[in-house]
Length: 338
Ligand SMILES: Cc1cc2nc3c(=O)[nH]c(=O)nc-3n(C[C@H](O)[C@H](O)[C@H](O)COP(=O)(O)OP(=O)(O)OC[C@H]3O[C@@H](n4cnc5c(N)ncnc54)[C@H](O)[C@@H]3O)c2cc1C
Ligand code: SF4
Image 1: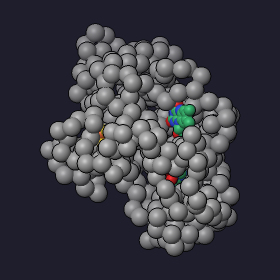
Image 2 (image 1 turned 45 degrees about the vertical axis):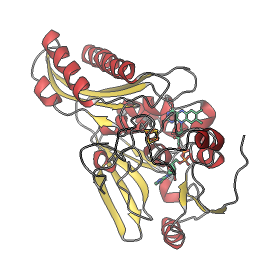
Image 3 (image 1 turned 135 degrees about the horizontal axis):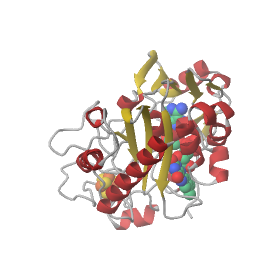
């Protein structure tokens, strides 16, 4: 295992101090639990000279959840989120997603901000320095070619695998962001820009597996917030190779509302497939009726059209897309019957 390089660790206690530290050190990185970032530093994938530990910033440490809304600070740990009684009661999809992340020790350290902003993953990227250099690197780091899609013309397809994002997407959540230019809020869905379109250049709003977040220089995610919807039931599930501790082969969050025997509203979101978490578009057209063959055929078609799993993991892309579709069907069936 490679040794950690030198870096400076700053520990602000207020958000203002954290933002000023980010501005003073443009090459710095925010540090949550470090359960992904420190691994990547050790592997020589990134080498930030300064880490800004946000865990002592009191205003980022709170969970507020009741029947009306949920607000979670970026420095809240995954264990705290998974075990919070009002999150379990009113927003089960969030608690279940948090409980499905990695193993217990990672969840004790890992934070909501780190999970929401989790780096994208690929078998050619999450490797040691010597492994990557033997392959002449790839364009997510210092190389010039994508080994997954050598004809990608500068586009990276590394996969977003955070479990919390799809859960919050089904609640139509917003992300609060703070930076040198002040505070702003965006729909969580627009924080993720990993569209990986080969026919269009990578821009500030149309990114790929390398440029996957719409954060501006020096910005931090401070909170994730959502309003509750009366009658909405929700759940999260994922398939992973090792059930005790593993990123998703595919992860699915579903939230739906019933009106009698009819489906009134449906929200489905995925992780572990595309360079961004995917909130399925077009589900409104599937609502208004009962769950029947026609409904499931329509759901399968939306998954087939919008889930673009590439060979970025040891599990083949077409298998991950099948898994995503099967999980979605199962969760919708279970929640509709609940
Ligand atoms: C063996 C193993 C298994 C894992 N399994 C899973 C899994 O099943 N599901 C899963 O989702 N993850 C998994 N992970 C990854 C990781 O443990 C979690 O995603 C965790 O939630 C990351 O949070 P963290 O606070 O440790 O992030 P860090 O490692 O501290 O940070 C991750 C990234 O987010 C940035 N960041 C942190 N906080 C903020 C902020 N407030 N604003 C902006 N950027 C920020 C960091 O700069 C960094 O780029 C696994 C990791 C390991 C080692
Ligand atoms: S998808 Fe291509 S460019 Fe992106 S990390 Fe993998 S090999 Fe590198």
